Length: 329
Image 1 (cartoon, rainbow, N blue to C red):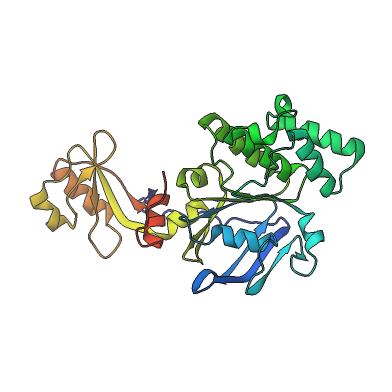
Image 2: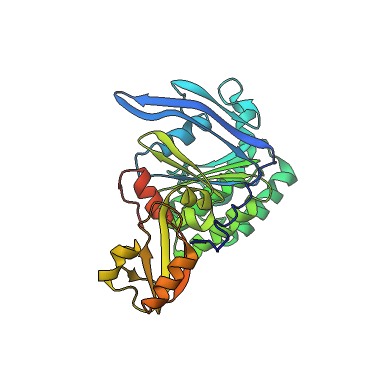
């Protein structure tokens, strides 16, 4: 809750500055499948150091947008650039700049893990000692050292996901694009992947697509909400919550104001807040007069604790934006 004092509104937080290099540019990307419009003029940029969360339900257009950005799917209209390189006009140069973990990991089941990583690394232009050092580093980082001689087809879903992450990171890309990267991982592995993504963001840009709200809230510095193929919100978690305010809230001690006196004081009936506190919604059209309100509440036996602007949770913001469609928990 944003608090105010007798002087009025709290000072607004300074606008975030994103001075780092722009490494992803999506410009009016659109794509249809038959009569279904999977993406509609999706436009955004991502800068180095950002962890951009793609949030939306299954079928919202997240994977379609990522496939257009990575050159796996040609847009009906619009362009995508990776580090300034147009993915359509120079796909090989653009693809050297990013690592991509798709939702369905493209593993060759008959290959050993080390063979698969050598194959991917060679395709990325790595050879000799450089290739071996990259494999050693990424397999250690992702806990795959003991599994290098295992066939990919014998791995559990969690370890298949780790191998998928390894192939996306083996060439030290400037951009990392992850589609549902924690899918199939146990809680400890999810925490490890979150830590890895934060480390990656120190040197590159990360796009992290998911339909799980907890993942977005835990890791992303910026969120894009996609619904029915359209980009409907873009900002930090704090900015998105700040755009949708629940109005002035009056927090008092004890059980709150007697319901029979609420109307005359322009208060809604109280609801439980923190232990020993009650929250009343302010019904007035203007900012509450703190001195007057404090005196009236004292007379009612409900001393004022604070007055502030209630903000919706990220989940409430999402439900408002998408017309109530639920997220997976």
